[in-house]
Length: 306
Image (cartoon, rainbow, N blue to C red; front, side, top):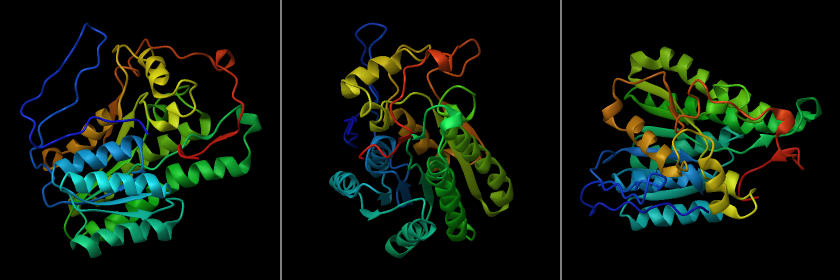
């Protein structure tokens, strides 16, 4: 798992440390209790964006219920959150199964008495390779995890939030906004996540439920780094070249966006697809044509721990 900076409430002020223009800015900021007392569910919490978000939310006072297929990774994240003085429990969860998702959200209510925030973040690479060679079972599994899993999370979040309001956040992608930014099945699913967030936001706004999506660019998570020879360090250097800002996207960049959308600071924000990509989607950026990309020796990219 990619190590992420630890966030501690004792830190004072924000420091941006640089050794030249290409250095990574520090992501350490002081904890301010922005989620104090809020009950939060996060899927895909075993590594990457989900783990970074769980630890950041823990430092901001959230009570957490974490879900993932990766039991060892999920339990480890929960333990780190508890070490930050947060209440945190983990449940093995397959987001492609509606009952699993429903039980995960129900646990937040039984554990903490309420559900305030849901972050639908579980993901995988899904079907890859030439479109005409995509197998039906790989397409279906991609949609089940990336799109149906979000549908289940939003559906059951609304069930718990309709009488008290809340914030629902889902991980989309820049691949869902621009053709050519990711594998076809993945891109279609992520486009669905962004639009699902918009249309549901319209329906539930009167109940004080906010529904938003986050669209990350290239982020150095295990889904990418475990498939790059040389691991996170090499993956980071490759990702740094994708966008105008000369830096590597980190899980905490997305976690801070999720914190804003989970907190009361975003009380007037709903139905949005928040792009966090270092300028990747700016006009003028060009993608490598499909016929010039490296050959792929698999038809499906599963969860990072497999």
